Structure formats: structure tokens, C-alpha cells
Length: 143
View 1 (cartoon, helix red, strand yellow):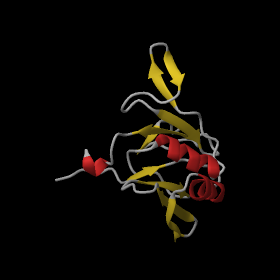
View 2: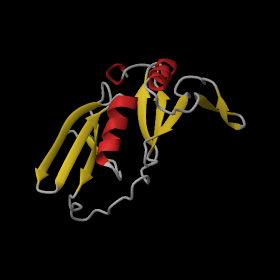
View 3: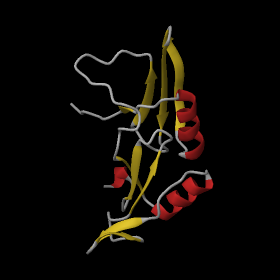
View 4: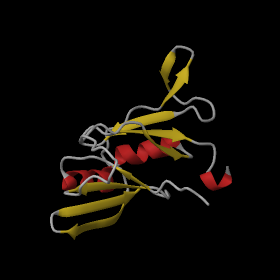
């Protein structure tokens, strides 16, 4: 049996502002924007080519045994791309505020690309939820 990670909740304060950011600036595909019950709204979005989506929830009670995250507290979500420079160019072209490409060097984080698996950049959504983009040597299906 496979255990697949498919949806990650992202805590936000303004659903419409977050939806605009993720679709227009981050380039995620809008999968669902629905009021599933009175006062309960779900927006689900997927990064290009990903099998894992993010979901923003409004008015939904927390699942039993879970805790509620405050907007902006989700950090370190990681997306892999095969060409970090092209991905950065696309994000900047969409108006996203994205960091320079960096790698871990002898003195810590240094600007510029590193060796295989060692090139990263980051961005935040309007609430401060933090994302990291890492360059992978090939598509997941080829690894």
C-alpha cells in the first residue's frame, strides 16, 4: 500500500488574496473553490506538475486530534524544479518577491548555484507562509 502526501493545509487570513497570490504570482493551478457547507469554504491549488496540492480552509472545524495553525506559521514547504534559474525567472515575471538563488557553501548560505541538489530560493505568501524551491537533477519519475 502506498502512503501518498496529497494535500497540505496552508493557514491564511484572506482566502481571496491568497488565491490570487497562488494562482497569479506562484503559478499554481486552481483545482477547487467551493463552499462545501454554509460558511465553510475550501480553496485547493496545485503547483505545476505536482501530485500534492495545498488547501486553504475557512470556517472548517479542525480535524479531530489536530491543532490549528496561525496564518504565516507554515514554513519550509519545499518544491523541486529541474531548472531553478528558469523557475526564478518565471516567478519574478509573475511579480513574486523571490530570493536570489543560493547554495550552502563553506561559510553557510552563499549566493549562486551550487552542485547537484544544492541550489535553493525562497518566497513567502502574503501571510508569511514560507516556501523553498530546490533544484533537482531530474524529474521525480526519473529518479
